[in-house]
Image 1 (spheres, rainbow, N blue to C red):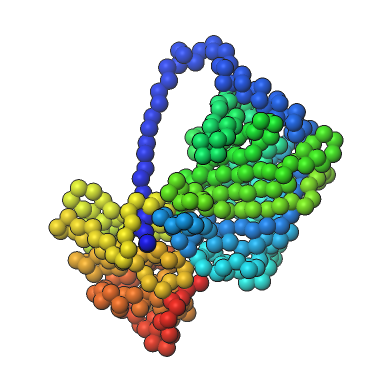
Image 2 (cartoon, rainbow, N blue to C red):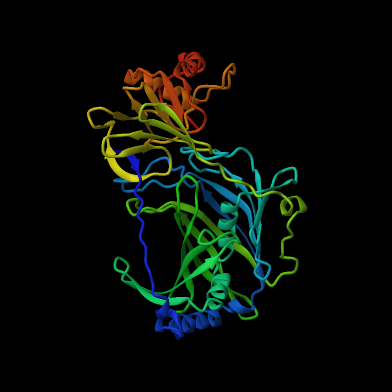
Length: 457
Protein backbone atom coordinates (compact mmCIF):
# COMPACT_ATOMS: atom_id res chain seq x y z
CA UNK A 1 0.00 0.00 0.00
CA UNK A 2 1.25 3.46 -0.80
CA UNK A 3 0.92 6.31 1.58
CA UNK A 4 0.20 9.98 1.81
CA UNK A 5 2.06 12.11 4.29
CA UNK A 6 0.41 14.64 6.58
CA UNK A 7 1.41 16.63 9.63
CA UNK A 8 0.04 17.37 13.05
CA UNK A 9 1.41 19.93 15.47
CA UNK A 10 0.41 20.07 19.09
CA UNK A 11 1.08 22.96 21.43
CA UNK A 12 0.69 22.95 25.17
CA UNK A 13 1.58 25.35 27.93
CA UNK A 14 2.23 24.86 31.63
CA UNK A 15 2.35 27.68 34.17
CA UNK A 16 3.99 27.23 37.54
CA UNK A 17 3.51 29.69 40.35
CA UNK A 18 6.83 31.32 41.34
CA UNK A 19 5.87 30.96 44.99
CA UNK A 20 6.01 27.17 44.75
CA UNK A 21 9.59 27.30 43.50
CA UNK A 22 10.96 29.35 46.38
CA UNK A 23 13.16 27.66 48.97
CA UNK A 24 12.38 24.20 47.65
CA UNK A 25 14.56 21.33 48.68
CA UNK A 26 15.41 18.64 46.11
CA UNK A 27 12.29 16.61 45.51
CA UNK A 28 12.36 12.80 45.81
CA UNK A 29 12.87 12.36 42.06
CA UNK A 30 15.88 14.68 42.08
CA UNK A 31 17.33 12.89 45.10
CA UNK A 32 16.78 9.54 43.40
CA UNK A 33 18.52 10.80 40.28
CA UNK A 34 21.59 11.79 42.25
CA UNK A 35 21.80 8.37 43.88
CA UNK A 36 21.34 6.58 40.56
CA UNK A 37 23.87 8.75 38.75
CA UNK A 38 26.45 8.26 41.48
CA UNK A 39 25.97 4.50 41.18
CA UNK A 40 26.25 4.70 37.40
CA UNK A 41 29.37 6.82 37.73
CA UNK A 42 30.91 4.22 40.00
CA UNK A 43 29.91 1.40 37.63
CA UNK A 44 31.84 2.77 34.63
CA UNK A 45 34.19 5.36 36.13
CA UNK A 46 32.64 8.19 34.15
CA UNK A 47 33.97 11.05 36.28
CA UNK A 48 37.57 10.02 35.69
CA UNK A 49 37.24 10.35 31.92
CA UNK A 50 38.33 13.71 30.51
CA UNK A 51 38.61 12.68 26.88
CA UNK A 52 38.24 9.59 24.72
CA UNK A 53 38.70 8.24 21.20
CA UNK A 54 36.44 5.50 19.80
CA UNK A 55 37.42 3.80 16.53
CA UNK A 56 35.47 1.24 14.52
CA UNK A 57 33.41 0.34 11.48
CA UNK A 58 29.72 -0.04 10.70
CA UNK A 59 27.03 1.63 8.62
CA UNK A 60 25.12 4.91 8.43
CA UNK A 61 21.68 5.81 7.09
CA UNK A 62 20.27 8.86 5.29
CA UNK A 63 17.53 10.39 7.53
CA UNK A 64 14.35 11.42 5.73
CA UNK A 65 15.23 9.45 2.58
CA UNK A 66 13.59 6.07 3.17
CA UNK A 67 12.46 4.23 0.05
CA UNK A 68 9.20 3.06 1.68
CA UNK A 69 7.19 4.62 4.53
CA UNK A 70 6.71 1.25 6.24
CA UNK A 71 3.15 1.92 7.40
CA UNK A 72 1.13 -1.28 7.13
CA UNK A 73 4.15 -3.39 6.14
CA UNK A 74 5.82 -6.08 8.24
CA UNK A 75 9.37 -4.89 7.60
CA UNK A 76 8.96 -1.15 8.04
CA UNK A 77 10.41 1.61 5.90
CA UNK A 78 14.04 1.87 6.93
CA UNK A 79 16.55 4.44 5.71
CA UNK A 80 18.87 3.81 2.78
CA UNK A 81 22.35 3.22 4.13
CA UNK A 82 26.00 2.92 3.26
CA UNK A 83 28.89 1.31 5.08
CA UNK A 84 31.22 3.47 7.16
CA UNK A 85 34.92 2.69 7.47
CA UNK A 86 37.54 4.17 9.78
CA UNK A 87 34.88 5.78 11.97
CA UNK A 88 36.66 7.76 14.72
CA UNK A 89 34.84 9.75 17.41
CA UNK A 90 37.14 12.00 19.46
CA UNK A 91 35.76 13.90 22.45
CA UNK A 92 37.26 16.42 24.87
CA UNK A 93 34.64 16.98 27.57
CA UNK A 94 36.22 19.92 29.39
CA UNK A 95 36.57 21.86 26.14
CA UNK A 96 33.12 20.77 24.85
CA UNK A 97 34.75 19.75 21.62
CA UNK A 98 34.39 16.72 19.37
CA UNK A 99 35.50 15.39 16.02
CA UNK A 100 33.86 12.75 13.85
CA UNK A 101 35.76 11.35 10.89
CA UNK A 102 34.77 8.46 8.63
CA UNK A 103 34.64 7.17 5.07
CA UNK A 104 31.34 6.25 3.44
CA UNK A 105 31.30 3.21 1.14
CA UNK A 106 28.25 1.87 -0.67
CA UNK A 107 29.25 -1.72 -0.02
CA UNK A 108 26.54 -4.33 -0.59
CA UNK A 109 23.73 -2.03 0.54
CA UNK A 110 20.75 -1.60 -1.82
CA UNK A 111 20.77 1.58 -3.90
CA UNK A 112 17.05 2.25 -3.52
CA UNK A 113 16.16 5.52 -1.87
CA UNK A 114 17.85 8.90 -1.92
CA UNK A 115 20.04 11.37 -0.09
CA UNK A 116 22.93 13.65 -0.96
CA UNK A 117 25.79 11.61 -2.42
CA UNK A 118 23.72 8.42 -2.54
CA UNK A 119 24.51 5.89 -3.86
CA UNK A 120 28.10 6.43 -2.75
CA UNK A 121 30.83 6.58 -5.37
CA UNK A 122 34.28 5.62 -4.15
CA UNK A 123 35.17 6.19 -0.48
CA UNK A 124 34.58 9.88 0.28
CA UNK A 125 35.94 11.07 3.62
CA UNK A 126 33.95 13.19 6.07
CA UNK A 127 35.42 15.44 8.79
CA UNK A 128 32.96 17.06 11.22
CA UNK A 129 33.88 19.26 14.22
CA UNK A 130 32.27 21.13 17.09
CA UNK A 131 33.67 23.36 19.86
CA UNK A 132 31.01 24.88 22.09
CA UNK A 133 28.60 26.56 19.67
CA UNK A 134 31.05 26.66 16.75
CA UNK A 135 30.85 23.80 14.27
CA UNK A 136 32.38 23.21 10.86
CA UNK A 137 33.22 20.62 8.23
CA UNK A 138 36.49 20.14 6.40
CA UNK A 139 36.40 19.23 2.71
CA UNK A 140 38.79 17.11 0.66
CA UNK A 141 40.96 20.16 -0.01
CA UNK A 142 41.40 20.80 3.72
CA UNK A 143 39.15 23.85 3.76
CA UNK A 144 37.02 24.47 6.87
CA UNK A 145 33.44 25.57 6.28
CA UNK A 146 31.20 26.70 9.18
CA UNK A 147 27.73 25.15 9.44
CA UNK A 148 24.55 26.89 10.52
CA UNK A 149 23.77 27.38 14.24
CA UNK A 150 20.90 24.87 14.25
CA UNK A 151 23.11 22.02 13.05
CA UNK A 152 25.95 23.18 15.31
CA UNK A 153 23.62 22.83 18.30
CA UNK A 154 22.68 19.31 17.21
CA UNK A 155 26.35 18.42 16.96
CA UNK A 156 27.10 19.81 20.43
CA UNK A 157 24.17 17.76 21.73
CA UNK A 158 25.61 14.57 20.24
CA UNK A 159 28.77 15.07 22.27
CA UNK A 160 26.74 14.62 25.48
CA UNK A 161 24.79 11.52 24.47
CA UNK A 162 27.68 9.14 25.19
CA UNK A 163 27.31 7.36 28.58
CA UNK A 164 30.41 9.04 30.06
CA UNK A 165 29.40 12.55 29.03
CA UNK A 166 25.72 11.97 29.82
CA UNK A 167 26.51 10.94 33.39
CA UNK A 168 28.84 13.89 33.90
CA UNK A 169 26.31 16.40 32.54
CA UNK A 170 23.41 14.92 34.51
CA UNK A 171 25.41 14.95 37.76
CA UNK A 172 26.13 18.64 37.20
CA UNK A 173 22.43 19.47 36.86
CA UNK A 174 20.66 19.79 40.25
CA UNK A 175 17.31 19.52 38.48
CA UNK A 176 18.00 16.11 36.98
CA UNK A 177 15.16 13.82 38.06
CA UNK A 178 14.67 10.05 38.09
CA UNK A 179 11.57 8.01 37.26
CA UNK A 180 10.79 4.37 36.53
CA UNK A 181 9.71 3.15 33.09
CA UNK A 182 8.15 -0.22 32.30
CA UNK A 183 8.09 -1.78 28.81
CA UNK A 184 5.17 -4.16 28.68
CA UNK A 185 6.13 -5.98 25.48
CA UNK A 186 9.56 -6.77 26.86
CA UNK A 187 8.40 -7.14 30.47
CA UNK A 188 11.31 -4.91 31.39
CA UNK A 189 11.69 -2.10 33.90
CA UNK A 190 14.38 0.57 33.64
CA UNK A 191 15.38 3.58 35.69
CA UNK A 192 15.25 6.85 33.77
CA UNK A 193 17.09 10.12 34.41
CA UNK A 194 15.97 13.24 32.58
CA UNK A 195 17.44 16.73 32.47
CA UNK A 196 17.65 19.78 30.23
CA UNK A 197 20.89 20.65 28.50
CA UNK A 198 22.10 23.93 27.03
CA UNK A 199 23.70 23.29 23.64
CA UNK A 200 24.42 26.80 22.35
CA UNK A 201 24.70 30.42 23.48
CA UNK A 202 21.79 31.86 21.53
CA UNK A 203 18.54 32.92 23.22
CA UNK A 204 16.61 30.27 25.07
CA UNK A 205 14.62 28.04 24.67
CA UNK A 206 16.06 27.40 21.20
CA UNK A 207 19.31 26.28 22.77
CA UNK A 208 17.94 23.87 25.37
CA UNK A 209 17.25 20.20 24.70
CA UNK A 210 15.55 17.64 26.91
CA UNK A 211 17.57 14.44 27.32
CA UNK A 212 16.58 11.19 29.05
CA UNK A 213 18.74 8.17 29.78
CA UNK A 214 17.64 4.64 30.67
CA UNK A 215 19.73 2.58 33.10
CA UNK A 216 19.51 -1.17 33.62
CA UNK A 217 19.65 -3.05 36.94
CA UNK A 218 23.47 -2.89 36.85
CA UNK A 219 23.34 0.93 36.58
CA UNK A 220 24.66 0.83 33.01
CA UNK A 221 23.27 3.41 30.62
CA UNK A 222 21.58 1.55 27.77
CA UNK A 223 19.63 4.16 25.84
CA UNK A 224 19.56 7.97 25.50
CA UNK A 225 16.59 9.74 23.92
CA UNK A 226 16.40 13.37 22.85
CA UNK A 227 15.15 15.57 20.00
CA UNK A 228 17.13 17.14 17.20
CA UNK A 229 16.04 20.10 15.10
CA UNK A 230 15.65 19.57 11.36
CA UNK A 231 14.54 22.20 8.83
CA UNK A 232 12.54 19.64 6.83
CA UNK A 233 11.45 16.95 9.27
CA UNK A 234 10.92 19.32 12.19
CA UNK A 235 11.95 18.24 15.69
CA UNK A 236 12.91 14.60 15.24
CA UNK A 237 13.29 12.05 18.01
CA UNK A 238 16.84 10.73 18.28
CA UNK A 239 17.65 7.53 20.14
CA UNK A 240 21.19 6.31 20.91
CA UNK A 241 21.63 2.78 22.27
CA UNK A 242 24.88 1.82 23.96
CA UNK A 243 26.01 -1.75 24.60
CA UNK A 244 28.93 -4.15 24.85
CA UNK A 245 30.60 -2.43 27.81
CA UNK A 246 34.20 -3.50 28.34
CA UNK A 247 36.95 -2.62 30.79
CA UNK A 248 39.45 -0.23 29.15
CA UNK A 249 41.69 0.18 32.19
CA UNK A 250 41.93 2.33 35.32
CA UNK A 251 38.45 1.33 36.47
CA UNK A 252 36.74 2.65 33.33
CA UNK A 253 34.20 0.70 31.30
CA UNK A 254 33.22 2.00 27.87
CA UNK A 255 30.56 0.80 25.43
CA UNK A 256 31.93 -0.77 22.27
CA UNK A 257 28.77 -0.51 20.19
CA UNK A 258 26.43 2.34 19.29
CA UNK A 259 23.11 1.90 17.50
CA UNK A 260 21.09 5.03 16.75
CA UNK A 261 17.68 5.95 15.34
CA UNK A 262 16.54 9.35 14.07
CA UNK A 263 13.01 10.34 13.09
CA UNK A 264 11.18 7.28 14.41
CA UNK A 265 7.38 7.24 14.23
CA UNK A 266 5.02 4.96 16.20
CA UNK A 267 3.39 3.71 12.97
CA UNK A 268 6.72 2.54 11.53
CA UNK A 269 7.78 -0.90 12.80
CA UNK A 270 11.51 -1.22 13.37
CA UNK A 271 12.18 2.51 13.31
CA UNK A 272 14.60 4.55 11.23
CA UNK A 273 18.03 3.05 11.83
CA UNK A 274 20.55 5.86 11.43
CA UNK A 275 23.88 4.54 12.71
CA UNK A 276 25.48 1.29 13.84
CA UNK A 277 29.16 1.16 14.71
CA UNK A 278 31.16 -1.47 16.58
CA UNK A 279 34.27 0.00 18.15
CA UNK A 280 37.39 -2.15 17.99
CA UNK A 281 39.59 0.37 19.79
CA UNK A 282 38.62 2.64 22.69
CA UNK A 283 41.07 4.89 24.52
CA UNK A 284 40.37 7.29 27.40
CA UNK A 285 42.20 10.37 28.67
CA UNK A 286 44.14 10.74 25.46
CA UNK A 287 46.44 13.64 24.72
CA UNK A 288 45.56 16.32 22.18
CA UNK A 289 41.87 15.44 22.05
CA UNK A 290 40.76 19.07 22.15
CA UNK A 291 39.82 20.65 18.82
CA UNK A 292 40.86 24.17 17.84
CA UNK A 293 38.45 26.44 16.01
CA UNK A 294 39.98 27.60 12.69
CA UNK A 295 40.36 31.36 12.36
CA UNK A 296 38.05 31.55 9.35
CA UNK A 297 35.33 29.74 11.33
CA UNK A 298 35.81 31.83 14.46
CA UNK A 299 35.73 35.10 12.54
CA UNK A 300 33.01 34.15 10.06
CA UNK A 301 29.69 35.98 10.24
CA UNK A 302 26.87 33.78 11.51
CA UNK A 303 25.58 31.34 8.93
CA UNK A 304 22.04 32.51 8.43
CA UNK A 305 19.04 30.37 7.70
CA UNK A 306 16.72 31.28 4.87
CA UNK A 307 13.55 33.27 5.43
CA UNK A 308 10.34 31.91 3.97
CA UNK A 309 9.30 33.76 0.82
CA UNK A 310 5.60 33.54 -0.07
CA UNK A 311 4.70 33.85 -3.75
CA UNK A 312 1.16 33.68 -5.11
CA UNK A 313 0.82 31.09 -7.86
CA UNK A 314 -2.95 31.42 -8.31
CA UNK A 315 -5.99 32.42 -6.28
CA UNK A 316 -5.74 30.48 -3.02
CA UNK A 317 -2.42 28.85 -3.96
CA UNK A 318 0.83 30.14 -2.40
CA UNK A 319 4.38 28.92 -2.98
CA UNK A 320 6.42 28.90 0.27
CA UNK A 321 10.08 29.04 -0.74
CA UNK A 322 13.40 30.54 0.28
CA UNK A 323 15.28 27.45 1.42
CA UNK A 324 16.41 24.13 0.01
CA UNK A 325 12.87 22.74 0.27
CA UNK A 326 9.66 24.42 -0.83
CA UNK A 327 6.02 23.89 0.06
CA UNK A 328 2.73 24.85 -1.54
CA UNK A 329 -0.19 26.04 0.60
CA UNK A 330 -3.68 25.62 -0.87
CA UNK A 331 -6.66 27.40 0.68
CA UNK A 332 -9.86 25.41 1.13
CA UNK A 333 -13.14 26.58 2.63
CA UNK A 334 -12.43 25.34 6.16
CA UNK A 335 -8.72 24.59 6.17
CA UNK A 336 -5.39 25.02 4.41
CA UNK A 337 -3.63 22.02 2.87
CA UNK A 338 0.15 22.09 2.60
CA UNK A 339 2.12 19.90 0.22
CA UNK A 340 5.79 19.50 0.93
CA UNK A 341 8.45 17.49 2.76
CA UNK A 342 8.68 16.35 6.36
CA UNK A 343 5.10 15.35 7.01
CA UNK A 344 3.88 12.45 9.14
CA UNK A 345 1.69 9.61 7.91
CA UNK A 346 -1.96 10.53 8.30
CA UNK A 347 -3.82 8.99 5.35
CA UNK A 348 -3.18 5.91 3.24
CA UNK A 349 -4.33 5.19 -0.30
CA UNK A 350 -3.41 2.93 -3.17
CA UNK A 351 -3.12 4.93 -6.40
CA UNK A 352 -4.98 8.25 -6.07
CA UNK A 353 -6.65 10.41 -3.46
CA UNK A 354 -8.66 13.62 -3.85
CA UNK A 355 -9.24 16.55 -1.50
CA UNK A 356 -12.07 18.87 -2.51
CA UNK A 357 -14.52 21.35 -1.01
CA UNK A 358 -16.47 21.78 -4.23
CA UNK A 359 -14.38 24.74 -5.33
CA UNK A 360 -10.75 23.87 -4.60
CA UNK A 361 -9.35 20.45 -5.49
CA UNK A 362 -6.04 18.64 -4.96
CA UNK A 363 -5.45 15.27 -6.59
CA UNK A 364 -2.69 13.07 -5.18
CA UNK A 365 -1.30 10.45 -7.54
CA UNK A 366 1.21 7.71 -6.86
CA UNK A 367 4.35 7.83 -9.03
CA UNK A 368 4.88 4.40 -10.57
CA UNK A 369 8.30 2.93 -11.34
CA UNK A 370 10.45 5.24 -9.20
CA UNK A 371 13.58 3.72 -7.71
CA UNK A 372 14.02 6.77 -5.48
CA UNK A 373 10.88 5.97 -3.43
CA UNK A 374 8.01 3.50 -3.74
CA UNK A 375 5.55 5.83 -1.95
CA UNK A 376 6.24 9.04 -3.86
CA UNK A 377 3.20 11.09 -4.86
CA UNK A 378 2.64 14.17 -6.97
CA UNK A 379 -0.02 16.78 -6.21
CA UNK A 380 -2.13 18.06 -9.08
CA UNK A 381 -4.43 21.08 -8.97
CA UNK A 382 -6.74 20.63 -11.98
CA UNK A 383 -8.39 24.05 -11.67
CA UNK A 384 -5.02 25.86 -11.83
CA UNK A 385 -3.26 23.19 -13.96
CA UNK A 386 -0.41 23.03 -11.43
CA UNK A 387 1.64 19.93 -10.59
CA UNK A 388 3.83 19.74 -7.46
CA UNK A 389 6.67 17.19 -7.45
CA UNK A 390 9.67 16.30 -5.31
CA UNK A 391 13.11 14.89 -6.13
CA UNK A 392 12.24 14.46 -9.82
CA UNK A 393 13.53 17.68 -11.30
CA UNK A 394 11.61 20.64 -12.61
CA UNK A 395 11.61 23.25 -15.33
CA UNK A 396 15.16 24.42 -16.15
CA UNK A 397 16.25 28.04 -15.73
CA UNK A 398 15.59 30.10 -18.82
CA UNK A 399 17.93 29.28 -21.68
CA UNK A 400 19.57 26.33 -19.93
CA UNK A 401 19.65 22.64 -20.82
CA UNK A 402 20.74 20.75 -17.71
CA UNK A 403 21.28 16.98 -17.74
CA UNK A 404 18.10 14.92 -17.37
CA UNK A 405 18.19 12.16 -14.76
CA UNK A 406 16.10 9.01 -14.55
CA UNK A 407 13.78 10.46 -11.91
CA UNK A 408 12.68 13.24 -14.29
CA UNK A 409 11.96 10.66 -16.99
CA UNK A 410 9.78 8.69 -14.57
CA UNK A 411 7.85 11.85 -13.66
CA UNK A 412 7.37 12.76 -17.32
CA UNK A 413 6.01 9.28 -18.07
CA UNK A 414 3.64 9.38 -15.10
CA UNK A 415 2.21 12.77 -16.08
CA UNK A 416 1.51 11.34 -19.54
CA UNK A 417 0.07 8.13 -18.09
CA UNK A 418 -2.31 10.09 -15.85
CA UNK A 419 -3.24 12.44 -18.72
CA UNK A 420 -2.70 15.50 -16.54
CA UNK A 421 -3.14 18.88 -18.23
CA UNK A 422 -0.23 20.79 -16.66
CA UNK A 423 0.72 24.40 -17.29
CA UNK A 424 2.86 25.18 -14.23
CA UNK A 425 5.37 22.82 -12.64
CA UNK A 426 6.31 23.46 -8.99
CA UNK A 427 9.23 21.32 -7.75
CA UNK A 428 9.93 20.98 -4.03
CA UNK A 429 13.59 21.70 -4.90
CA UNK A 430 13.99 24.63 -7.27
CA UNK A 431 11.87 27.37 -8.75
CA UNK A 432 8.42 27.00 -10.33
CA UNK A 433 8.26 27.29 -14.09
CA UNK A 434 6.39 26.33 -17.25
CA UNK A 435 5.68 22.65 -17.70
CA UNK A 436 6.47 23.17 -21.40
CA UNK A 437 10.12 23.80 -20.46
CA UNK A 438 10.25 20.61 -18.41
CA UNK A 439 8.78 18.70 -21.37
CA UNK A 440 11.28 20.32 -23.74
CA UNK A 441 14.33 18.89 -22.01
CA UNK A 442 12.86 15.62 -20.71
CA UNK A 443 10.72 14.41 -23.64
CA UNK A 444 13.68 13.57 -25.95
CA UNK A 445 15.38 11.57 -23.19
CA UNK A 446 12.14 9.79 -22.27
CA UNK A 447 11.56 8.86 -25.92
CA UNK A 448 14.77 6.84 -26.00
CA UNK A 449 14.56 5.44 -22.45
CA UNK A 450 12.79 2.11 -21.82
CA UNK A 451 10.04 2.47 -19.20
CA UNK A 452 10.44 -1.02 -17.78
CA UNK A 453 11.75 -1.02 -14.23
CA UNK A 454 11.29 2.68 -13.56
CA UNK A 455 14.38 4.63 -12.67
CA UNK A 456 16.00 7.12 -10.38
CA UNK A 457 18.96 7.15 -8.10
